[in-house]
Image (cartoon, rainbow, N blue to C red; front, side, top):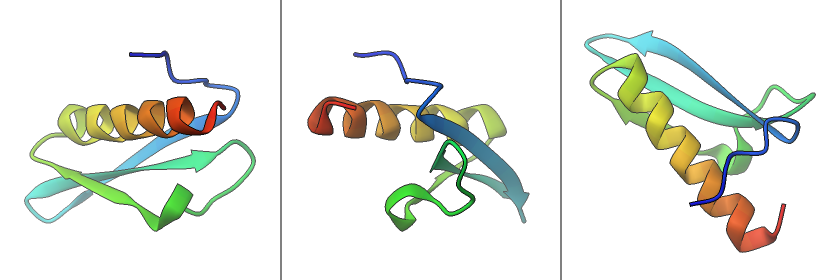
Length: 63
């Protein structure tokens, strides 16, 4: 899988009740890319899912 281009995307996360959510933003923006928020049991799980989603997005759109 391709590496997440950190100059294009940033991963953000926060705890929500008993789980964590993570989302990807384009550098310089605050809103989730594609309005997508990913859920995980831990912060690491949610952020890993967000990175994988961003990597797939980058590959499919040649970012």
